[in-house]
Length: 320
Ligand code: F6P
Image 1: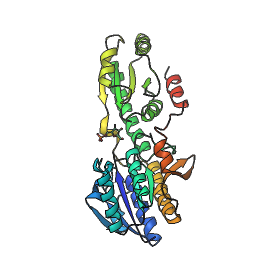
Image 2: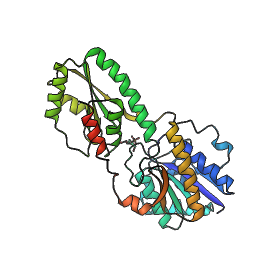
Image 3: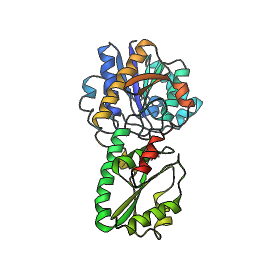
Image 4: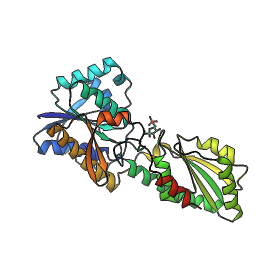
């Protein structure tokens, strides 16, 4: 193996830079040239790539986002786009590609692999919706961002006897919401994976108000409803004055946690090893404390990663 390429695609997540850095340095110490593709698959189509050196990746470890930049590329979903991307990779003499991104990006990686260019994927998305890995890159940092925000909101909520309805990202997956509910001590967690009863939630909130509690935090996954709508439905019947906050893209950025830096380093090294050893058409994953590769086909066919039922159970039972 003489030359590989690396790209980051889809929504950015903290730790992507750590993974790119690991891919570059693991490649270089193994005698492999590494090209960095800018703006994800769009950059493959538009030939935005350059050779990376060990210096190119110095100082990136502690930065959020992705220094290679990212994009959501519709063209890559077309036959012509895929062909162009593969032709450009072949023209560049690339014998392997590391794709760092979420479910759509990994599906793109599989399509390239099926065209005969070896690919290893690295799961990176704050949503934690990718199966065959306990955690995706960036989830831990996003959780820390959310917990920090909710801690702040609690100060204000309890100073004014208010309820906050907080909308959390995650697309159709409730992981970030339920995990941050537990970690921040919020009272309610509305996720797409579990039915919820707004009537019961209103009763519980009114009871809290009557007991003299000075705040309540209701976490809503974007896949379970809009915070604005939930607040409109509950605000007249709970006693607490109500405010809404959509945490939005604030959740995605920021300096990666030590956990995400470590995970990025481990995933990056494992991806290069996978390419060297010919274990391609795969995705790196965290299984317990070990890193393991899973077939990309299996990953893309499995749908959304299910939530461990212990999470909703803990969120509900610890908030009484
Ligand atoms: O997949 C990551 C994510 O942040 C989702 O949680 C969210 O629904 C979406 O991306 C937002 O996409 P965009 O950054 O394109 O607005």
